Amino acid sequence: MKYAFFPGCVLKGAAAEAHTSMMKVSEALGIELVEIPDWTCCGASHAQGVSELSMLAINARNISIAEHMGLPIMTVCNTCTLQLKQAKAKLDEDENLRAQVNEILEKSGHPYPYQGTAEVTHFLWVLDAHPEVFAGKIKNKLTNVKVAGFYGCHLIRPQKVLNYEDGRNPESLEKLIKLLGATPVDFDYRLKCCGFHAFFTAEHDVLTVTGKIADNAAQAGAQMIVTPCPLCQMQLDMYSPEGREATKSSVEVPILHLQQLVGFALGFSKEEMGIGRHVTAADKVTI
Amino acid sequence: MIVTLQIHRYVDEKKWIQEYKIEITKGLTILSALHEIKAKQDPSLSFTSSCRSSICGACAVRVNDHSELACEVLLDTLVKRYKTDVLVVEPLGNFRVIRDLIVDWDPKYEKMKKIEPSLHPKAEFTVQTGCKQSIEDFDKYKKYAGCILCGSCVSECNKSALNEKDFLDPFIFVKAAKLVEDSRDKDHKQHLKDVIEAGLWKCFNCQECTASCPKDLDPAGAIEKLKEATFKLEMASSVGSNHAKAIYDDIYNTGLLDESKLSVQSEGFISAAFRVPIAYRLMKTGKLDLFEKAPVNKDISKIRSIIDIAAKEDK
Image (cartoon, rainbow over all chains, first blue to last red; front, side, top):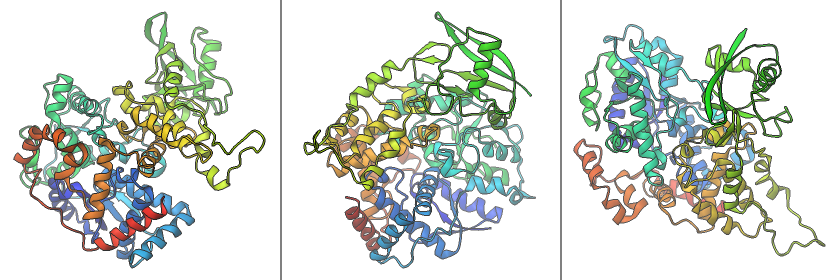
């Protein structure tokens, strides 16, 4: 299995542990990742609010490079997934728009047009669709570990764009948690929004929900939360102290990147998975 | 198959959950089930409905925590989706409940007045000459005219659920976008000013509104259009717009987000100074390196060219 890898900005920055763990885990699972050369930020939904056409062209460029590589794109961030898939949907459905964007690409000197030949998929979906990659590789079954799966908005909504599973009752995370030997924990806030994108503009509300998500998962019996989105991970991990203060909660729950949980089941150590870079409850990661 | 509906009741300030059993027959929608319950089991159950064909917007309710247009959704679909024979039915979220599944729209209409939801026609249009609009200009907002005021988007808004006082409901943003995109209107800036003051930039971008809209109006997309309009009309000067511009500029400058500068670029130096405790926390774990410079993309001249050409065409 080979993919054009779109890491997204935060994997090169604050969520670098998501990158290092992803490299180790993908190699162990036999999934070959070739980083898209000279990829740019997807716009993170914010730059789209400055100029949608500019960001459509920017993401057309990103996708066209992968098309030139002849590979489908794999993302590891929910917002990157939504921005790329939204761009792809708009360009694939509207040939006038596609022509306009391709003309922009050509005028800029970009060597090839957007053709719509590369699929965009997320690491969670790849693992869900191909559980056979785990055959014989789970060296450390996570028995008796209770994990709450927090999906993150941009992997499940809107249905029309993402369309991997039913966004109102997704199951891919819970199935994966079970496959790794752990017990999935259902909790009321599993499909809620962590507020990452509104942190600067609605800070108090965002910190309130940051606290509520972790508290709700802990009340439901979770020892850890796992999420396929590094933005959710950063929000819930980095701002956990403020979240706890906003909700008068004292429970600290470790927040894992998806690839870290997978890595533990494959036999990697906490150090190898970069748990030392976590802000919250790194010592409570029981594997 | 027999399905149990656990319906949240509210009558004379008394709240309780009442169970009703109903047999799923072919074509049984949530609304037809409610009608059947009211007719044959419990006449006291109250809900609103009218057209029964997805156009009046009267019958939206919440089932298993997600808003649904009751006349449009089969019970069978929900049973298969949630893999259960028990469905929880509640009134729409983020509304004051009057009784059972009936919610109060008056506060929402009051909120809608904040954006002056009517067209202010340009001076050139008169009763005698009328008002013409090209098909191209009409297409820019016609989608938003399809709002049936069902409230599905309101129900699932994550921002409103936390605090609705400094925000508008998604359908109101849709109405604002309809006016700002309408070439016949002479007060785009006034409509935008109202929307910005009423909390445009506080949207979480959780996409619940777009996911819930039974008419595919994409309220989250309407909010994005309004944000774009603030830049086109040179009205962007708040933390939210600074944050968006910072990311846009980062792509222009290096191709990648520069995390270390984001707070200062969004909030300004004084507010960013209050972030010192969190910055220290992040530096301790290695998550923040204030001295790290974002590498410049090898293709940056082409990337800048793309943005320059697109920005010109986007005016």
